[in-house]
Image (cartoon, rainbow, N blue to C red; front, side, top):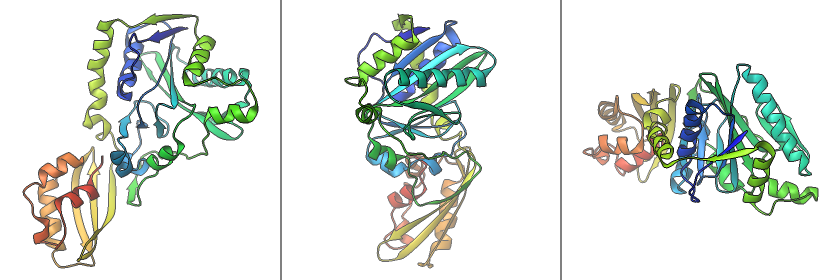
Length: 332
């Protein structure tokens, strides 16, 4: 198996590496392997509803980007304390190929002195706690398998980022199964086993275990990956792939009371808006005006602010602002 590397030392945003996997699957016939790190991000699966998986407010506040991948499986958090591992192979028996890869990854960890085991189809546990979550998808006979390998990730940030708000949501999207997680750095310490000095040492060890050669990407290949990356950054892909859903979110309006905003969204576009609350005067007119302005718009905060720019919500409900409405209804 061949390890694929970049000449540059700096890391890129996570979407670049998702595009890199796809590019390699489309343009190389070798079995290839890559290990990479990226700044803090949340990655939702192909069929997941972002709003039920991600604390979007926390992510906005802490600069955590949200991306969608083309594989299934659950929602994961990644930061510079985590290694992302990708393996691309040929073959038609995808379940067998994926199971073989998972067992090989667990065996690698066992050879370093810790007790790792495959759990279910997607996870690797050490002493009952999850250290790796994985997923796969196929493309024209090529199989992309990828997942996390937690070394010293910020578990507090992970817990906050993957905990959705208290909004009431209904959807047919696929939900994540939450498990207790652990960092390998901690697991090595408890096991008294050989411990890599840092994430780079762990990366080098896993590459030696899986690979017998390496190749650096050319500048031209990197440019092509950057072009492909644009499709992963397209809001239509990130949010437009959301399953249809309805959202109900409460907002406290100082001096007026509690408002409940209801939103129906399909393919990332708003279909219907409703407003109710204990400050009843004006809610009917407000709901009608919001639906007029927002119907057919995408549900990103920037789009909402643009659509509501000329509106003065305080004319309907005293103390209500455009910003508070956008915060209540935004999908990012």
